[in-house]
Length: 230
Image 1 (cartoon, rainbow, N blue to C red):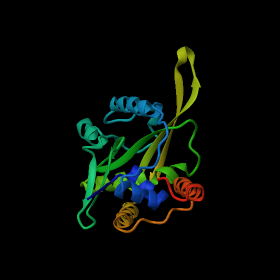
Image 2 (image 1 turned 45 degrees about the vertical axis):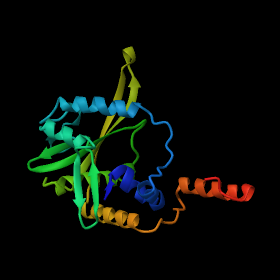
Image 3 (image 1 turned 180 degrees about the vertical axis):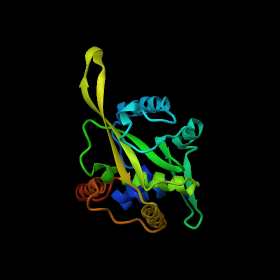
Image 4 (image 1 turned 60 degrees about the horizontal axis):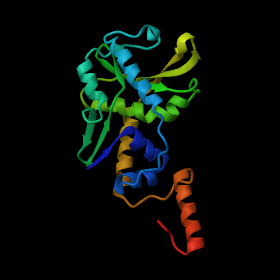
């Protein structure tokens, strides 16, 4: 049974089906450079900060987003963990979609996914949908599949530096973006991704830098050594 996440799974599938197929069927992951620790540290302190406002909103978000922070912290902590987070099992596909939420809002009986993002500058128009649509669609779908009624939108809350103040205190700008979500869209994408995994390895995507590098290396090795070295 395939276990697929929104980020390293479905986003990878959208970017390059071949890299996606290799990741899950051959356990060959894309090379990854040094991962900065600052975003992870920011994520932890933002979570702690938001936890102090369960059942309400931090003052800087009042009037900017709908709903209140989910009051049940124990349940939210389960959803935040990859091992105990929300899952959807499709027995017909023999696959699982799973994810870990940053946070969740409630408005009446509606649940609204909320995700924090740390950037070096303000997000450009269209960036949220381009980079995070699949992630937010997945969270909305996972909530719905587990019996929680969802709105047709989610939120991204961006934190990006404004200036350094006295005593080295860094002040951040905060921008909340409401993004429409679609359960139908993510179910279709999930199904397409699983079907690709069950088939033959796809051709390299012409836009994929990883596939281009690999093909260039194979071509060079064949030219100079008469065979591939990998």
